[in-house]
Amino acid sequence: MASLKALTLTSVAVLALTRLATAADLLPPAPELPPPIAPAEFSGWYLRGDVGISENFSKPSVSISPDPVAAGLASGFLAPGADNTFLNPTISQSALFDAGVGYQVNNWFRADVTGELRGGGEFQSLKVLNDLGNNRQFADFYRANTSSAIGLVNAYADLGTWYGITPFVGAGVGVAYNRLSGLTDTGLSTQGRHGVFPTGGYASDHGATNFAWALMAGLDFNVTQNLKLELGYRYLNYGGFTSGAINCLDGGGCNCTPSTISTKTLASNDVRIGLRWMIGDNFAPPPPEPLVRKY
Image (cartoon, rainbow, N blue to C red; front, side, top):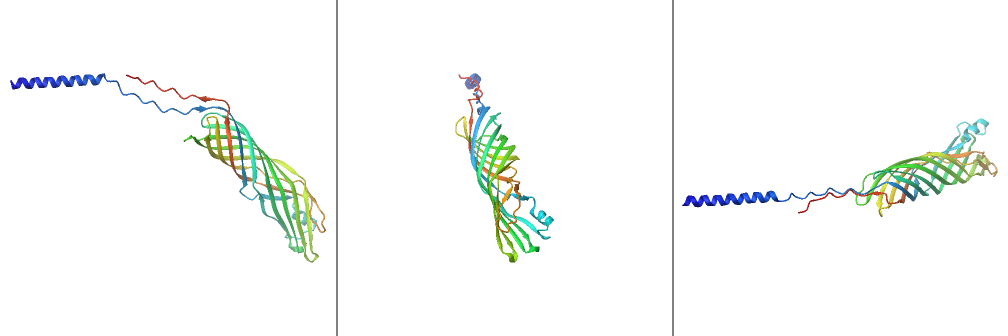
């Protein structure tokens, strides 16, 4: 009798386990999680505009032509050993504005063409010519206004977007038309026991075209889907300035000669803030979510 009860209980247990296993086989599989949705990708034209400040980070190299020392030695006006030096040449801060049009190829590469105006800067330098052999010294203080018109073709690599912020790097090449205006030469001629005499002159305005190139980095901020605020830094190398011929004013003992002043290797640190407006709604829609079976 006990054996019969044990056999019955065992059969019931086996039957229950079999039913549980069958029920588990009939349950639907766990739903698949959809993959992350890629951000919408834009390709198309855009407009841009920037304002900023330009700060020349190094002293420009200044020269005068023809060389007054060489000319003075050749004519016998200067004694051997005479030297000519430009002291503390500087170009002050300039305000800048640019506008341009570009094309966004995809989410990481874009290119644009910009035209830029910068002005409000001032060139200053003191030139000292020492003629120790004749116990003479000539000092000239030069001052002029600076302005530039710059055209660049630029390419950028956008480095990904996090929380609506996109860092980028870029480079550009182009031309710069640099102009010196209102150049004045104010100085003194010290000629030993003969006394001190005023010297000076002025130069006509003059501009010249130079090769220009730039390196850039910055951050883009998404204002709307079509509008981006851009904060950027740029290193710009834009050639040099050349004055017109200096017209001398005879102040009694003036040694001024018709000559031109030139600066070379102009390079600036530019900080800019601007806007980029994506033209149209050329945004690729995100891929559709995969279908998930529901039971």
